[in-house]
Image (cartoon, rainbow, N blue to C red; front, side, top):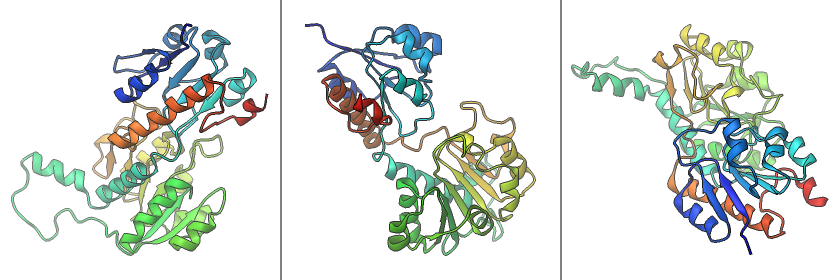
Length: 326
């Protein structure tokens, strides 16, 4: 009996590919670049399942090109803003993601960006590497204190709560704004729920952990940046379009806020011209989940979801469970 086929849009850890090949015929896009939509439509045609990345647009046009035999698209990501959920649901295609396994890595990375921006680590590192350092000075590379400062968290879900947990080691006051209140975070972590305006005005450090939806696009824009302290530091390790990048560039350039740490960008991999040249911003290439354990565990969930669905079982993590009811 011929095996079902799976198309993987980018190389993921080899052990995940090996596990997938125990069950299915597998084709992997091995080039170190994303596929164009036309390429993905052609290469995934006829497959029964796809492992996609957040950079792959999964919509009705693509699914129609792939064919009605495709039962599942498993995102190798927790985010789902690349999915047209309604289009997939209409066609009976199950969509899955990888929540939970990257919470620790993303929260730790968030704090790494916070500390790097607060203490000007990248700027100071470059100074030394460029041979400019001539000796210690008492007023050299003065940064921002982190201990006992106010940490504002936008989006108190799993990752936001994890960031709050780490902040307790610095005796930070934790305030948050979220679509839904998190009583557990309030009780266990001492977090205080506030409205968005209060969050912006009172935060010394503001970290973003909201999903990308039409409502959260440009959650931080020119108006919001003007409400923040001139000494505030903004950290984004969620999704790039949550921040109006042009407005942020202007705010950083004009010292309207003190600094920013960015893992994601509005139009990746492009960055607003001039942003990366500013001294008061730390920019890294979307690596919040980039640890061996995290990336392997993401792959395990994606593979397990495909194995379950193609064997007639419900997946571990389903984005559109209404498909399972049909």
